[in-house]
Image (cartoon, rainbow, N blue to C red; front, side, top):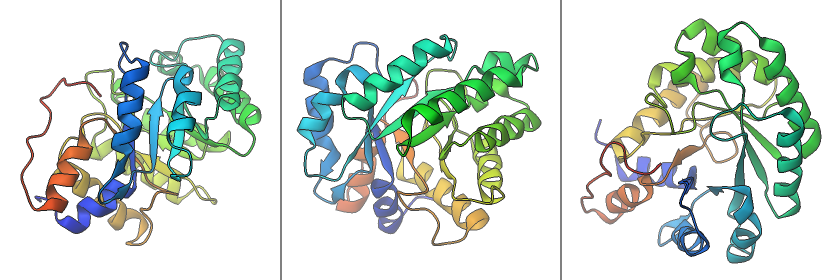
Length: 255
């Protein structure tokens, strides 16, 4: 699958354009927000650190582009009260969405309670804002454990199941995303899915859209239910839409 202009248009509308590099700075956030408004329409959101939320809110005013902020990122091991405070600060500064990393290392030891506590706490803290739960599926590894983590997140009120931080060796994979889609499908309420990390080409995006179409139906994947977290995908999508070729970022490039 090479990816068509139709695939590129669908993916662009669902893109969470990301700068989660440790060296992120205000000038880079301004550039990110400018890139979020494209000649082919806006992306769904920018995904950034909470300290940049107010800056992004001002830069994107009137655009309809949402502000997603990561918390407990990237390791997933901060104390619950610290994560709760960071979440509150992000919302106060203008975040519309919170991307929460769960304590996945504790899940590997069989400790489900820690994950339940942090998802439940952040869910209560953000009220009606959107909660995306980052499961770090590549580190969990075992499909049964990925399914259990996704199920716990749904039970505790998440709005989106997100694969990964983009900071580990294995990030989004079709196998993990299919499990998340199945859990979302069976949730009994609307739950979205967000593959993140390593998605660099229109063909990559098209493969995930086709997976959504197969599991959830052809009308399901839209910004309200599906996101793609990436930093370099935008240019590849625009190249497809413009009928030109773009070289995707090299493996290991900034997520």
